[in-house]
Amino acid sequence: MQKLEMLYEGKAKRVYKIDREDAYLVYYKDDATAFNGEKKGVIEGKGAINNRVSNHLMSMLEEKGIPTHLIEEISDRETIVRKVTIVPIEVIVRNIAAGSLSKRLGLPEGTRLKMPVLEYCYKDDTLGDPMVNEYHILAMDLATKEELAKIAEYAFRINGILTEYLKDLNIELIDFKLEFGRTPGGEIILADEISPDTCRFWDSVTGEKLDKDRFRRDLGSVEEAYQEIIKRLMGV
Ligand code: 5GP
Image (cartoon, rainbow, N blue to C red; front, side, top):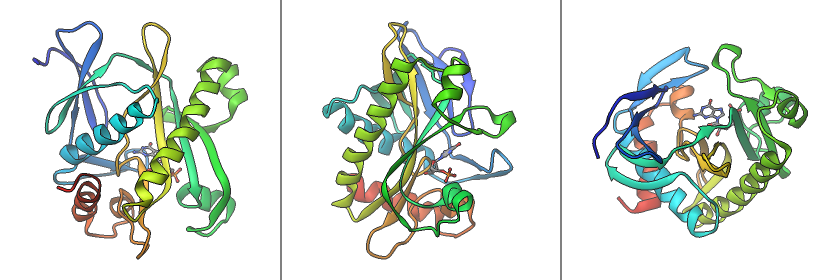
């Protein structure tokens, strides 16, 4: 599949037009950023790992009835995905307090929440992705009430599926961020990626962090953590 013009370059991926009306090509980079682009670096081999891990998880979700953008992995770092317009909301699900939730509410990291928490952030780098609620989303016309209901339903189902799957691999799913897209036909489907860049994964025995927090917090062994995740998920 030949890459035509580059449509968009994000922090971790590039999106290309291809010779197919209903699809794009996504290329996964090794570039890593944190704190809204303030911290920049490279995680060697990350692009290839995130591509494969995300596709592995998305195909599992598809099998369980969650519509996703995944069409076909065509190389180590490249995947053909369905064309969508991204709903400009980051959808975050949390099972255990960590990161910004711990900071905001004074809950020590590692505190189990009595039930999963759903949060939304408005995707806008210049504003630093501020948290919004359903009222803001409807008032700003970022999504319709029906779309938001679908998004919330999918987010909780995805949480259940991933939590169960990862538990068997001794990985605790602490929290994660999803993005959804609208197809030209108006269907809401899961887009973007699910990877150690977008999830917090803790070893359920040792508590070791196996995700991008190793980069964000300068914990060392960053590449090793990504490799450990692909090894546990895909045996490679
Ligand atoms: P927090 O709000 O605690 O920083 O992040 C919650 C979860 O969402 C974490 O798993 C984190 O990786 C993910 N997340 C939130 N915002 C972003 C973002 O802008 N980029 C990425 N890659 N992940 C995010």
